[in-house]
Length: 114
Length: 114
Image (tube, rainbow over all chains, first blue to last red; front, side):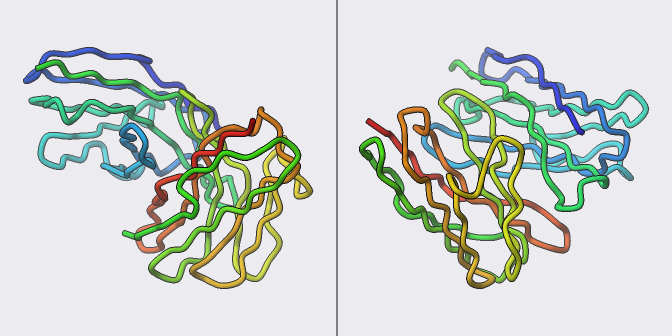
């Protein structure tokens, strides 16, 4: 089955810096890659996603890139702000799973210091 | 997108008892999911619940311990039966919104078993 690895597990940056979180996946049939932000005491929030027919997608300060050949995708946050502090999860969904299951990475705790 | 609510938001229960968690979504969806998130960990899928069919459980989760109901396209329940302290976790309801097949999460139910 699909396996998703996520790095780093923690990331500390200064406000205004950029942050990059990287994930790799194992199933070449995976075709959908969402990113979730989870603030303390809340459920995961979908912040951006990318599908296998696209190499990059941007939404204001966040962007996601996908390299299908290398089977990895990354989340880029520019001009970080303290409110970006949260745990971020990547996930992958394979066409091989009949019930459209998402497989999650282990999470990255991002801390943005003022 | 979808707006998902869960009840209760948190509970403290005694070992050996059962708790039923409710999930309500503001639109009709075919696929609903139940996840468990242990403290500081990633999300683990418990089961997929499609309306009109039996829930499909992931490896390590059984119907006797986590019975699920899915009576209509906007509602589902998860029961955690015969609880032990190891069941202390956050339980998350999630739905798949078609076109474009994005998955959204509820706020979670924080369960503590004493």
